[in-house]
Length: 118
Image (cartoon, rainbow, N blue to C red; front, side, top):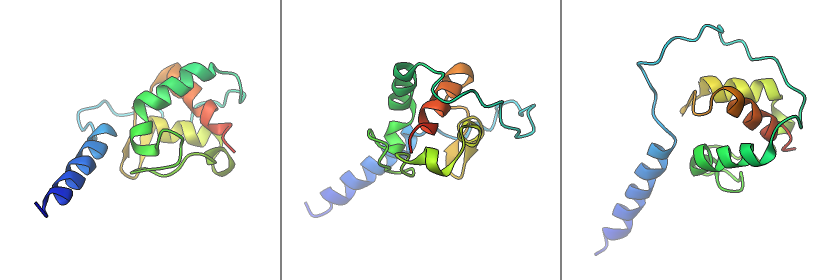
């Protein structure tokens, strides 16, 4: 019975890490040479779409309220990184975060929404 909390904690950790996605070794190499996309003006996005994308693809690691969990907190990410830098992390990943969880316009909207978090 004493092992039950440890087993539960391990199961939660495995779930949380798997929810962040895995490295896709079979993906095509990027043609952008790690150059960030052109920065769109902050605020020029659909906030509801960006927030929904965050909740579906990012919140399991970064927390429902951007407070951080397995991944770092993002509640003030806009004061630490530019929109271009945030987009680069979304597209290419960083540390244990895989790239490409959001793509195209969704990634751009997510980057703009996060850049507004000061």
